[in-house]
Image 1 (cartoon, helix red, strand yellow):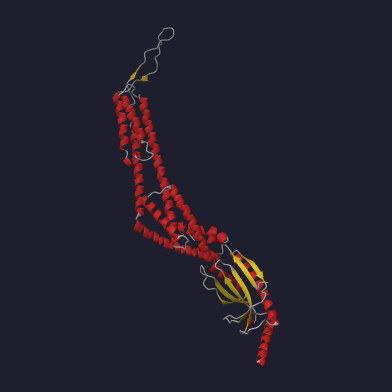
Image 2 (tube, rainbow, N blue to C red):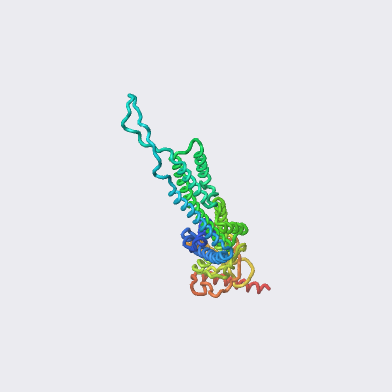
Length: 447
């Protein structure tokens, strides 16, 4: 029996997963999220409220982003950073081309070894292969000077880059130039090896700069996406608004510089993920109650119930109440807590505010209507579950003493007045009304 009942509706587990998805979809892609939410078992009505709220926030965030673009001008600074990256890449590419042209002459003075004698003392008729002699001092000097000039010609910001090979290359060039004036001058092969090392080092440096540019662009794209999410969160109810404001300032500054350390960006993204989850939970909680109120009354109307007083607009931090009339007679008071918990109390109706306990006929009729309400409540809860509300009855008992309320007329009266009441219900209602009339007469006679 459900004279008194409590129904818990808690789609919080699914909403905790789907909420951030809705936020991310709206903030980063600008797409509707109702389909995603519904696919995860969220009531369509709740999903629609969440989606409408987030979409409105996304539109306001887009307007704020346009205002920021005009005010902050960091998009121009990002373009400047990209242009500078291209200039660095082009400078290194030009150095590569120049290095390819700096080579030792293909023909250098050569000398023959004297014919060697074998163990018999006879001179071999064949000579040893020709071996290059020590190249001309001026040729090696010019080659090393050209290499040094190319290295110094690289822009200063590239020479000072943490991964620039120029300092090491200059040390090698200086060492060989010093040896040219000493007792152990370098050979042509050694100088050529220095040139080959320079070519490999500059090629690796160019590839590294290119990779750094790609990674920086990725970080800035992530930073830009994080800022978009921040702007959306600022348009929604948030538990920690000041923290979001601080993150916004840091992201804007990073976009202005055109750089942000990867570890710092990851930390900000993790904090935003936590904030987005908390915001989504708050949105879900706010969306649940109005959707649940509407769905419950809709299912009860479908079962023939008249709504005597609809729910006041459920808001955060405030409970809401409603009341309905059971077909053929009786009222149910509905109380909705701030967490979506529903409490139901069945009451017997009298046509007047007559005091006194229920007569035997009234008691019989009230218990019959209470049983009918019990059956209909289960049907309504099943309807809520079918819509995606995770609802279940957690408390259900027969009222020890059925309360009495005064009959409230509505525009669409009860089924009894429209001819749809069962004959048994009509008979019991007439008997109850006759009993009340008899008791009023007795009371008046005693006076």
